[in-house]
Image: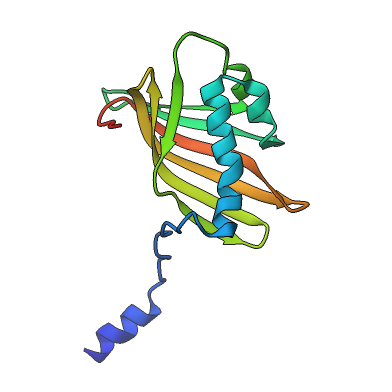
Length: 155
């Protein structure tokens, strides 16, 4: 018994998963503001609105999973990402519920499941991960990475 306790104490400890924080908290609301503005820019199909929320040296990375299980990784600069958001007839909407938010000074991360809807119907879903930086009192998105699949998506 004592040996088991000593071995357990010596084993490297995994960090617990980030827990969602209530968004009524001013700190977490401030971190979410540029993400929500980015989602609004996607809905408005306004690339410039998206670019106003990011640091230019960052970018967007998607890991797409096909129904057959194969995967592909694509990386885009913010200019490329925003350039892909063009006016169109379809209505885009991204929903991310109960994100986990961790803040340490001027660095934060936001992690959460999302669903991307086109005309109100699920198109794809997965998990978003945002790297956030606060500069001169304002949060900006440095990078976003997300998994993307077309199966198992719910509104």
